[in-house]
Length: 130
Image 1 (cartoon, rainbow, N blue to C red):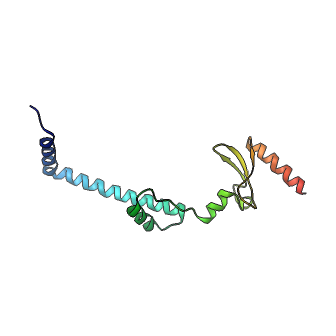
Image 2: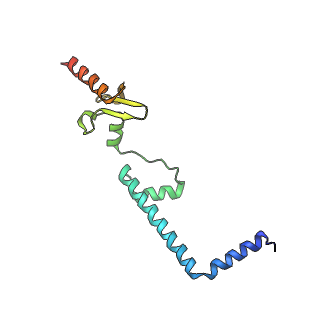
Image 3: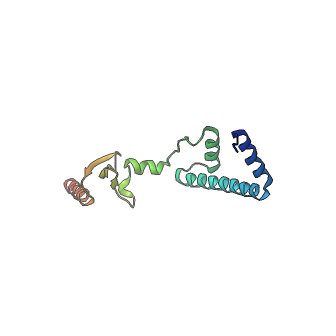
């Protein structure tokens, strides 16, 4: 017996509608997904400093492609300004190797082969400033 696509859709629809348990499970799954989405918005809020409700609204209006803003402190650490006053310091491991961040101007001060190489460069720099 051959079943057409239309007939198959009709059979599936009838089976879904006849099962209250299945419909209840689908509704619970939808509620869980909405709760998870809201949880992700709150995590994004903690990272960006934006309001979680605003993040959710932005995503609903323009989609997941909405760009997140970074907090001012994270921007300063990322570009190096004030790095000497942080727990991390100015030596950072990046995907392409080790770097020393410029504490005053921001950006990268020097690239290094290893953490110890960065420390040697910084020691020499500070000794020369004497």
